[in-house]
Length: 350
Image 1 (cartoon, one colour):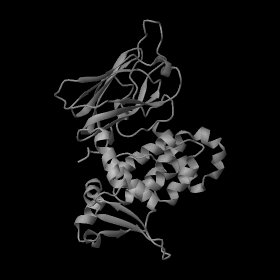
Image 2 (cartoon, rainbow, N blue to C red; image 1 turned 180 degrees about the vertical axis):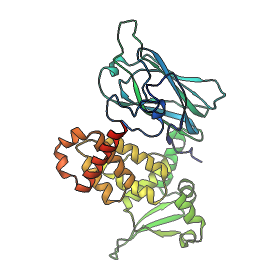
Image 3 (cartoon, rainbow, N blue to C red; image 1 turned 30 degrees about the vertical axis):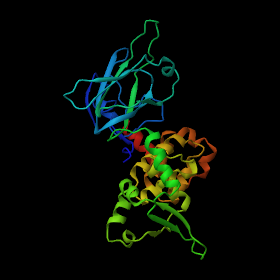
């Protein structure tokens, strides 16, 4: 069987920290959950800030599920670059295992830009769910003075619940199995409703059932599809359906920008939760002020409310650039009210 697909999770709780600027605003608990400040670069009370700068600082956090780590993503939203060491452990009683150490990034600290700092891991034989970040805000021996507090908005741990297997051993083999339809035992038909010959996609029941709750129920329940070798698909295009199946077989997908939201809808329809996570991450990377309204219109049209809210939050955090852009005139009135409400909510919290 292939390895489990990557799980992306944000901080569940904060276990310890060196200091915090406040008990509510700028508190260590601000790193819990998804980002609230990113992509804005600002001294923002929704992010954790130590009580003082020019000190060594640390924060220790816990994630809900222990994983074999693949990547750690740190949302640095004010004066990035101060993290010099990352440690992990499986339980609170275990000693820390150092997984990263390097000099701080003084170039990043001077650029006035927030970032998602990504630290990839080549593979681990041990699961972890606790992470410690050590930060260096002190004056360097070269005389470089750290500009101000370094603030962290969120921390995301990406990993697998079972040990990762190299792509060459499994992903390519399973993708070839799908593409050549070797020993396929289920055929999906895509009738056009006009009497023309249906296009088809061949697949494998067992694999689909292991990767999707929807398909597992389809093939094991009393549904008529559980007894058939043919299933008609009328609610999604063959191109998107095939794209989704390629992901189920290979644990990988090259998603075009125009396909992000339609593919998310397809994944939602067929219960492929990890593909939805991937689509959300792709949207985060692709989104900018110029294309935001097009993405928003597509999300509304396809009734993808979670992605719609992500776009609304992006616009609210970048409202100055958005209000001065050419795309501002293209947003509908209802969505604009949502953006303004989000701006007001953020202001009230700060």
